[in-house]
Length: 246
Image 1 (cartoon, rainbow, N blue to C red):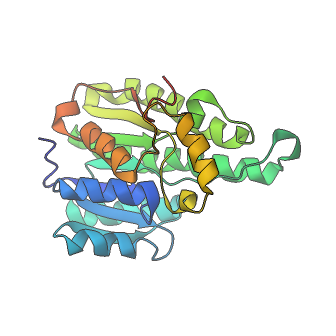
Image 2 (image 1 turned 60 degrees about the vertical axis):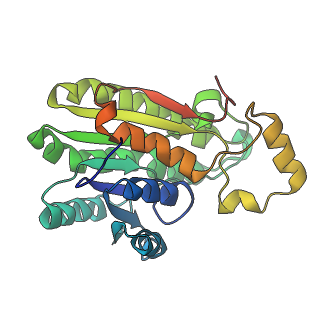
Image 3 (image 1 turned 45 degrees about the vertical axis):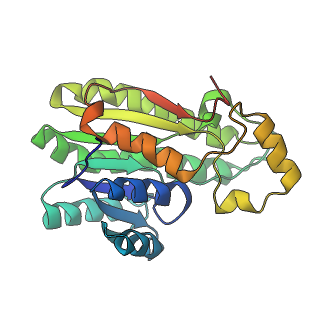
């Protein structure tokens, strides 16, 4: 079940946290992972995957640079002959109340979280359509569904991913390319480990399942959407948030 053997997968933002969790779960199901991140930051992810017998390679990628994206995609196709799955995970946050938010804080978040997804999708779409097969999965956020003070830029980018994916799903469904979204809630990563116990308790009180998610929780949802078992699912948002938003 959920066998991804022989599938070639690009995961952006794969150096740590959710991206690394996604890469590790997909690799555990047999996929060959192209772990993409700035510089050599994905090397640790690749080492971890190979350490348990998985298949992976690191790729240097700046998702905001269209030339970098195109070079990555061309290289993957040259080496492997195809790209089966694209996971758009790379993202940043520049939190600030709207009255204090600077234009560059808005622009940086939109460029990385939304425009870069357009760039990555644009690069892989023609090869997928030509093969009449593909999976495009983008990582949104519960914030894109319910909003959050101080995150107008982040919420807009993540909500935009949902609209973008639904429109794209309608365009490419006839070519057997599915497009879906996973919307995580609060997830335990390196960024959240340093938060005080009191804050973590407050977060848990917002979540019916009484815990933060894990990168593996998100990876399992992505794995399902990438699999043959999800062949009849497109244009959907899978919320993985412990019931925080229903």
